Length: 398
Image 1: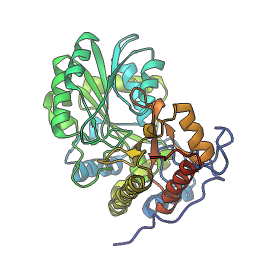
Image 2 (image 1 turned 180 degrees about the horizontal axis):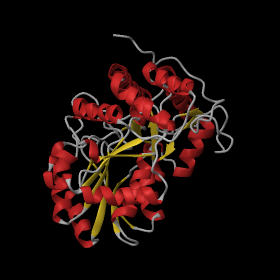
Image 3 (image 1 turned 135 degrees about the horizontal axis):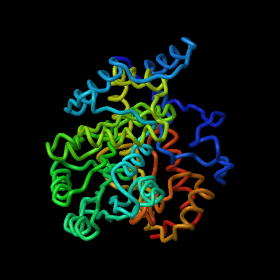
């Protein structure tokens, strides 16, 4: 088996990378280490790069759509990695999962209908609800004794009932924090949503990123009834670091729901797919398994190294235990800083560019999201800068 290199730093500052190339526009110090946007600083698998090159060398870039070998590559991946064999006709393509969530909101709800999300959560969920003029229902996640996010099912049921929720947007695995919901937790969500006639949009974009002992459970096949009342959003973008190619695979088993979704796609003129994205995705799902297995080991070790460093050197800063993903959730509340003070300290003193926890909603104050998808040397340099800055600011007094 080929050994892949995740330790080499690839300089992206002279590219169009949102994560690296626009510090001045975002008013970020030029020497700050980017640890924010959820893409990785690793080269995609060689087979993916070769597929993109081949498409470019062919030189004709006409309108495209998925054909049989594309569909089969996606279905085989779902079957082998996740134990679910969706039907070809269930699959629709969109430019991204966020796009798909907005389309689902438009397709299945009306203005002022209630849509539930569990916070803190990936901030475009809230944007999609509010900007589509739906009523946001926020379910605040709890932090259990083990330090992981937990769901307050009694409160959830009360909210579903009293708020007359029409649509539930589920992040599974959860971003931020890397919580992989258990089969039992997902079954309880299904039970409640069926009881109160709620459709579910499950964002499973991180479903390939789970660590040993925390397997991802596919949402749709847990219940025949829910399979007909859900939209499953997947993509190769996080897994193989190809978010910039803009392609997601959306599974909708129910024909009526699928047609409503397709109608909104058509209304928005989203009826074709980027041909380079199709080739990259097909190559990733066909040849990328070995690369992914090595990446998962590397990311898990990154998480362990950061956790150990904080415990030994900055015990006032804690990291939520991670079941999966490469997006860590750090609690800085022990430093005693307000959120504006924390942002200023990290950017201008530690020279670290993370995601402000408050953008993820309720429960985000005092927190930051840290992207672990970078070479370990860069990550540990970031930890050293954090420790040195905290020492200089005298934030670590006993």
